[in-house]
Image 1: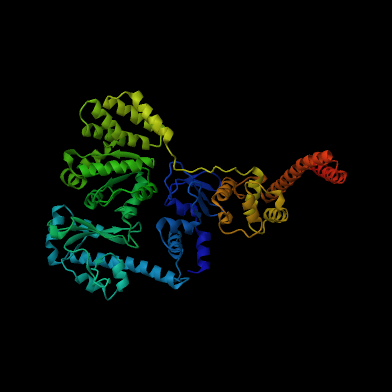
Image 2: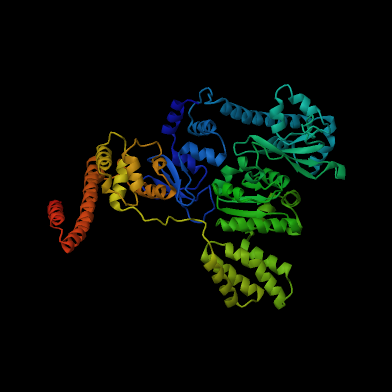
Length: 597
């Protein structure tokens, strides 16, 4: 895409609105917003968005950039794709695509074709579900209460028991590279090290498309109809590809995200069928982990929409273990977590079919706090009332208690556990206290010397438009007098901004993370000239710069004055009258200059 179009999109894009689609932001200044950083684990929000200058910056992990950089990093897309994404969100018509290099065109083309081949595969599987061979698949789905409406909504299909049919149908439309990169096909390595002919990866299976956040199919989960050893695992997922990384995707997110935001909670289940049944019953803010372990990336993805979650995994051992791991990850990120265990040991899909959605909703309303669930789990695992069993129960619970970021919640959890397990609360409190002392916070705070108000005023002036009088004054004086600001914390940034045009993102001039943090802090809380009162208009900003420059020059004079006093004493001690006269004259000149200020 052309630079002109990118600039047009950037000028029209509201970075706060775009970032706000991914991160919950709160206003902390006239033009500043903060939230939890989506690029690293943190408990306290260190992620800042500056609406005036159109950039984001994290004081914890030091990620920075503009609206395009943000979309590129978070959605793992190229620069042209980020421009398209932002343009679509802003309702800006897209021009015909252009690429800056053959490699970029090839990469974008491959990604687009991978999307296209997955759409073609989805349509192929949907059509195959209506074929005579798929009678058993249709019978299975009917037996699970899956209606024609559900099949259409979730685009459920069938992969026939055929190695070659899908390959032969797609071959006229997609090249060899795309078909191999799609993960839809397998091949065997030949004796000479080359890959053999492609054949269908999914055969004799019911297919469930896995969509990205925009609703495009990027992978599949396929359930075997047969259970013999020859049929392979009961569920088979697509391998990871250029489109699909299993630990970064949540099943049904595309359909659930609006309801998660509006209801401010999410329901997390294990499998696709659980998710589909609950969704079709009318509970739309439901997601599934698709049988994979819950990951930190999925937690961060979820945190963009809500910080409240109900976990409803299967009640078997594997489900309970998965629930415990999910609870651990979620509580570390300060989620409010509840857990529901369904009557009769049923999974959500079967419970909804047998008891109805009203009974399921009633069960959700009685979901336990995760702390109560874990205490009950500890008592089930170690039911004996012996000292040994209590120690084991305590060791089971301690890691979960320690993970809780909030001290009040930790203390409450510990008190409940002590009372229900019959443990001396003082012992448990001591364990928690010791753990808290050893706790390492994930947010790395800036430990360097902060900039003074004088430096902050000059930094703010230097990022103003080139024609602004305050910017011209600051730039001219600082470029002529680098000695005024030498040894200051902001010296490197002042020098960079004073001697070069201001880049689109001012943070780009900072040579290291410390100075970048210093500049971001300086720009974080200044008022927007349009919104501020009269004392912050353009004339006042120029006056502030004049005062700041005077302060810097006075600081240099005072420093030189102190140096001269020492030098005069040394010259007097040596009896060097010539140097003494020279230093005395300079001292008088400096004294006079300081009195006039």
